[in-house]
Image (cartoon, rainbow, N blue to C red; front, side, top):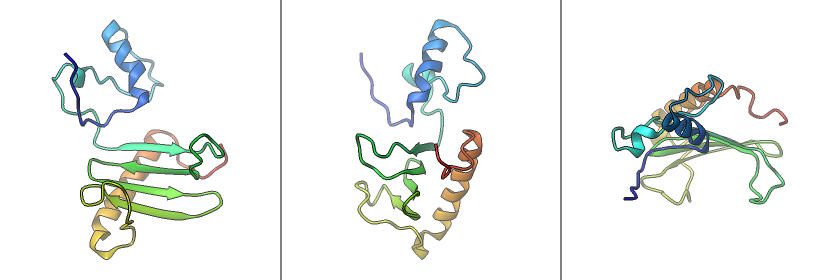
Length: 134
């Protein structure tokens, strides 16, 4: 039957997953990972954070250019181009992202950790200058 999961997966994981089921090794240049273990109930997750970059403005969603990182509890976002604004959300206490806690002293350690994760993932996904024109 169908199962649901809270695991953080991305579209980039689809191709490596299909290749895994087909018994084919993914190309080393592919950024995603197989989620076969999650689908088969053998794994709970394949990553602890997701990096994303949205730069299609104007686009169907009319969202300003931004990039960020999301963990199971926090989300750090940097809007750029015509603005330079950082936001961070505690998704446990604020699941609808209504009040940014960026620069809130109570979240100083979390913010430091999220900035560090953001930099790590920028390097991993070769997006080390995310505010450059795409």
